[in-house]
Length: 411
Ligand SMILES: *Cc1c(COP(=O)(O)O)cnc(C)c1O
Image (cartoon, rainbow, N blue to C red; front, side, top):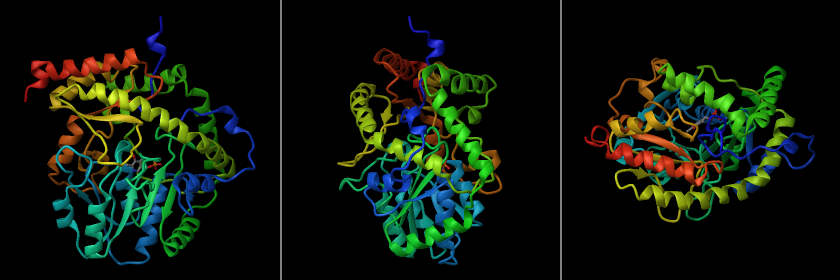
């Protein structure tokens, strides 16, 4: 019998680390390997996805007196923190009903000649609508920054990497997002002049910080040591269950971010670890795709739920399934059974941006009904290869029960 208590499934299917990636390395750099993987000319490595956004906004701010940055109202709180860090004004845009995209009419109404940038966001491996953002941006003369922090490897219908349609794109190499250097980011831009600006900004903003680099290196080694079912039980399962027991959902998903953003350069050793990991990413993502196809069809058999998918011939990645339940009560019923289990069920961000108490000073209170509904009705199911078919079936049955339950399923 498998001891459930010691078989923690990670909430996102991260690229499993390998010890030999930690050995000294003289091969191609992380930037070179990432450029090859993304199919772009050049990649700038930053110390985090948030730092990449700070560099991007700083570079744009030097080119324009505009102050507003439009982001989806349901996104990572770090995005709001980055905008505030740059002294810019956050304009959260409500979502479409039952989707990750900004509502086109709301977005169009928010855009004016004070809009510096629009940030379409590829949440949970899904490919967001960048075209609408581009059309709005062109109309008012703003830039588009694609937030691809959660979707490294996702491709548009023409096979180009996400992040390449907008003027600027960035990816996160943070722990829990897939391929990781514990913290790290990748920044890309199509236009050579903009790339030059970004590079100069990056060099000015982020200096080498030996103490921080040693800390991150130690954390990356620790990650290699714990990334297995038993290790995750101790490092992820126990703290999460403790947070849930004390009713702290924000701590349970790690949404409790600091308002200060570490800005430094990634050291050569971690750069090499990331460079070697990149070689394995394509094959790993193909395995996840195959598993996702089968499991999506099972989840699709549950009529009351929506499993977010990709449009047309677009190819997203599958770190987890993002699922919308019919009601908040059904979502909470499912979570009360699954969230504290070892099965890799969780939530994405707990709130729409205005509902985080710690963001009070940087996000204004707005209605944003669709973003709030999205926060209230969604949950995530891991697509980790460690989640066995029987365990996955347990999750599917629990979702069915939560929808069927009179109190949970009824509006
Ligand atoms: C994680 C995340 C970020 C920030 O990336 P870090 O590498 O953690 O700084 C930005 N946007 C989204 C949507 C994210 O999920």
